Amino acid sequence: MVTSTPPLPEQPTSGAVPIGQSLRDLIGEAQALRIDVQESEAARRRAELAQRRFSIVLGAALALLTLFSVLLFVVVRQLYDTADRNRALNERIADCTTAGGTCYERSGERTGAAVQQLVRSQLYIIECSRELPIAENPPGDAFDARFEKCVADRLAEPPK
Image 1 (tube, rainbow, N blue to C red):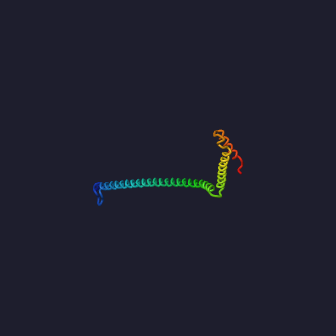
Image 2: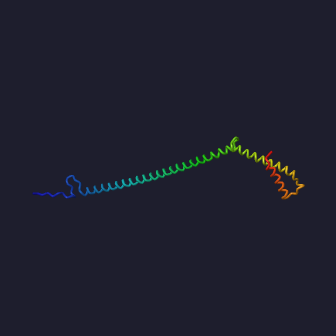
C-alpha cells in the first residue's frame, strides 16, 4: 500500500494559495484595518473637539445674550424710574410756572407781599429821615438806633 503524505504548507495544493502568502495578506489587511480604525478614531476625536468648541462658543454667545438682556432690562427700568420721578417734578414746575397753578398763585402772593414790604420800607425810611433830620441829629450809633426804631415801628403797624 502506498501511503501518501500531505502536502507541505509551503507547497500549494491544486489551486490553493501558499500559507505564507495568506499570512502576509492577512497581516496587510489587519494593518490596513488598524490604519482605518486609527483614522476613524482621529476623525471622531476631531468631530468631538469641533462639537465641544461649537458648544463653548454657543454657550458663550448665549451667556452674552443673557447678560445683554439683563443689562438692557436694568437700563430700561432705570429710565422708567427716572421718568416717573421727573413726572412729579415736571408737574410741580408746571404748577409753579403756569398762571392759575396753586404754586404760581402762592408765589405771586408772596412776591407781592415782599414787594409791598419793600415799598413800605422805602416810604418809611423817607418819612423817618424827614422826622429825624441829620442836621439836628449827629450821625452815630444813637442816631442809627432811633432811625431803625422809627422805621421798625412804622413797619409793625398794619398797612394802610
